[in-house]
Length: 617
Image 1 (cartoon, rainbow, N blue to C red):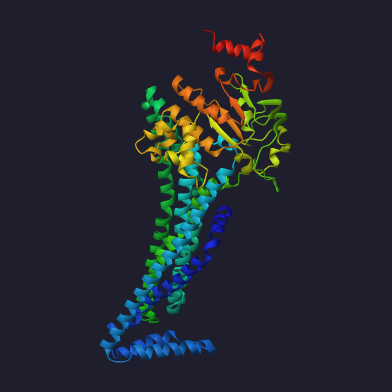
Image 2 (cartoon, rainbow, N blue to C red):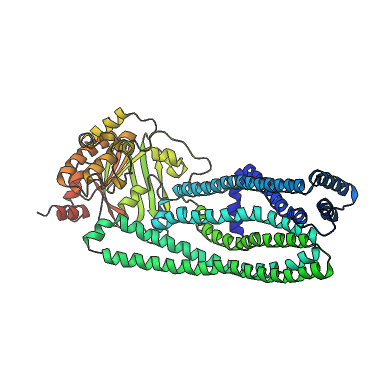
């Protein structure tokens, strides 16, 4: 229940709507009871007992149930007496008409208040679910890159979509039942007790048995529901990977393999759903069957009281049966509440697992705000390893980079090049050592300010399924189109953008699939140019391009690097010949540092070997 109470905390902002819903539920329950209780005078009026007029019969019916003592009892008696005089005056036809009008009014009011109760409760439910989903999504953006490295994308998507929907479905039903049904039960129990407390006590014997059975079923449901949500996450992951990698699937003719794998996951999901359905649905028929048994016994026992003992009237017994059988639907609904709580708790556990993950990369209590880069960046004995491994990716790196220089970082795959530049915007923090910017440890600088100083262009361009202009101006508010065009021209992108169907307003597809690799890269460079940061990070920005595209992109990159401090990671050594410094990494350590000509002169150096491998022809 701890998880479910945590879910309920999200209701607090909507307490006014919840209060209104409760008030309307009270009126609905009272009018629901009134509509049933009016059966007594209606039946007495319709089936007059021999020798008793309709007015006298109705009067006796009410008087027999309305004798109260004390000040409050006196007031109640006065109200009932006034009501009796108003309704039960006149001949039989007039009395019958008044009772029918009252019944219509009771049902009208019951349904009106039921509608209002449902609307205000829906406002609470949907607002709570919206807040839970928004908070989960917002928290995802606070988590470090290491978290996403270890989590499947489909699993995260499933938690924020499927799991939140599961909480929504369960919470909706639970709130509706927990507010309306108990009130309805109390009203009908009150009616039943007013007629015969002995019969009422006997009728309620089924409840403890039902509660024990339902509690046991709920515990099983929670476990199975958690497995169901995990299986849906596996299906989402499989679907995401297949769709994003559809080109590879088709190229290798793996459609049948992927189909079989997907069918296997959906079959497992199908079996789990059936298992949960069997468990969930058994509670209602069990409760209903027990209720029917008790109902039959009540009819037999009550009939004895009417026909033999004559302690209650037939009209009262019929109304009592109405009230008791009206108890069955709300009791049946309440019997499933625990099951739904367990199901929603299992789904919420997966959501709260995200919310409870503490961001490792975060601002200190009083971070320093910066708006410019003026001097130098220094790596001071920086070492780093990932959380899931003790092997050092960077080992004691020391480097001073002055403002305005172009620093190229080369090395074989796995040498630590990308990790080294990922430490600059604090995608990760060093395991030991520190990085300073103008003498300040970057961990003391406000993260948002630090990242505003940097622009990043990677080999895998990240574009969104929006217009060209939206992608170039990403992250910038109130950016006019002239500046976007200027950045596109500098990135050699303006000409091909103008040839698109709608120019700068063309939607480029998910990840820019409607554009070529070179076009996507130039859009990415235009975005970096428009941001105009003092520090640029280029991570193999030309490695996957053809020769023509590479020339255009390289020209754009040269404009991008002008008057900026730039870190360039490149496998193609021809693109970094003019760098101010070239850093050679090997197994996380800087093994060479110098200009292209100096490093090439070292016959036994790694840089020379890499150069000869690329230009051996």
